[in-house]
Length: 105
Length: 165
Image (cartoon, rainbow over all chains, first blue to last red; front, side):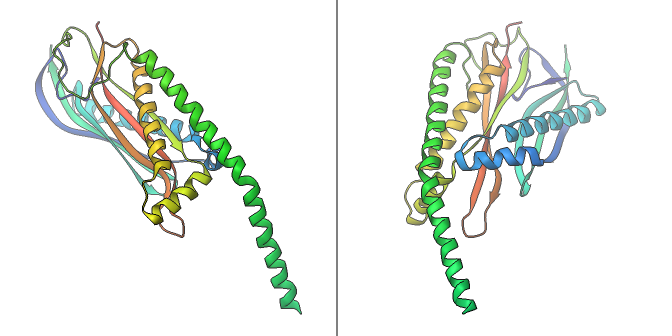
């Protein structure tokens, strides 16, 4: 499954546009990350627990989007965009969406 | 008599908290400043290394490289940064008075540069990264209460990396 965030895949032509596919996940932190982040909250710096949390949730959301596209019979997703929003204190939703297409090559 | 003892105790406790705060303030200020400065220097060094190797552009189509013969992959880079407590207090006062919030401005600038650097590091052998976008999100932000704050800010940069094979 090819993923790009341009409107077409360079070097390949799009045969058919299938439609919007998306994946999302809501994740919250656990107590271990919370304590370290609490310390970093005082001194500043990179909150590595949160970075890893968001990276994991991003790859999970992308996996769900790929699964959605595979079920619809696509072999590429173009124009992928991300959106993050906080749903409650300590939890954020990561939403990734794109256009599923079939490539002809 | 009981209430006098109680109010005396409360005054003592308040005084103790003020003293602890005044003792911790320079430590927090210094450590926060040192963390920000070392991060800034590390970013400047890595930007100098990365300048010629893998340009990240925001346009969708590039005319000077051959985009069609290789493969293209979406790559991302993200970072979550936070300000220290004293900078947050200073920012709170700046917000009330209406001055520009240099405390958070520098933080977001560092976060953006770090996210783009991580994007370039994740696509190390690519010829170019096109259609780069940067998204911001707040982490653990409390917008109500007596002192609204955000524990951290996440910057995510993503784009399409074009490889030569």
